[in-house]
Length: 487
Image 1 (cartoon, rainbow, N blue to C red):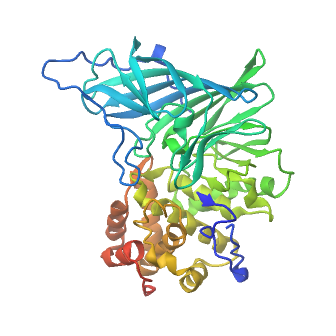
Image 2 (cartoon, helix red, strand yellow):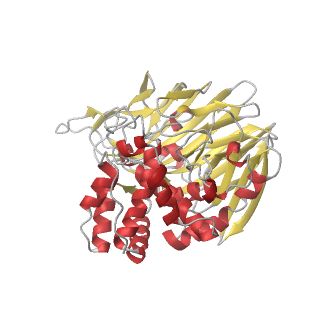
């Protein structure tokens, strides 16, 4: 994610360097056609217990849920902007990781009318922003199961202490579902933590004339009775906060690149110009990043530009980032495009296991901006590093990016010192080993999750050097580190 023009975390104001402060698979089966194994009947020897209402993340203990692992979601929603009403049916295909008497799904602000598990009616209750489902029989550990939830209401955003409003936002021409670290639970029931990635199929039904853009490969649209259904499919595992839907009036650009569809949308609320030109550079930027990070990890390319005062950031929504129009008010801006596309490798394909390790996302994406600037001849990564060493505020050195705390989760240290950590590693191990490390991280952790400890271990294995002191100083220290001796 890149924060907006008003946030110093994006890029320091350094006029000499132009660093302005703005910083093909078949559809998933429905519950009725699922071939998932029916959960076993309770056995006397089993001790069925309620699943946990949270994964235990140190920063957000109530996010996500325990006791099961989701394989895939099919999300079918209908939304009428005039009435601001949403109805939906979401199918969750999962495996029990414990003997479950009941399990939780995250769902905020919407009322559930029916739940089935493996085709049988299941009891359900609402507890704040949690849906508690109690199947007719217990779910045995390792059993596959399919839950189908029918729900509706007026969707609302979540007030988040880190980023403000996140989730479903009603707009003047439709709606936007977006936000980090949470947003998905405002429009469908979900295990809302990045540690439980899953595949997704979306069917978004809106009034004729409106466009509904989501993640992954476009599946076409059909219209009947004044409504149009837009289909999208993301077959690479995705963290729930990376899912999105944007409904409204857009200028659409489509194409093909390296056998993958390209689908981009720019809101008609902004005049054609810099935003369109910037998003048009998506595949060019992705091709460069592929040269330094390894193969592009997803089945589609694209981007979406929105204009809403509540969204003053860009977010790496998988395969199709969403950008605030504010990033393009001063002209073409491929720096932010490079940042969000870098996240497709680091943050999306390699997702977080825990929110404390956010520097792995934002630090590497910030460093990708420097690499892109070096590639285009604007400035070098070394120049970007040196300027930050001289000019970042003292608070950056006092806030360790490896343990920033919830308050500073998207603060300047995570971005700028996170990017500097990447360059400090490069200086310490040399260019050849550094880019081997980055490519190996993307390859070995692809479609999964990663931690700082795993990244450090990988860096030491490939470089043949002991790097504990380097990472301790740059990620966990509260004083300005010494500049590494360059190889």
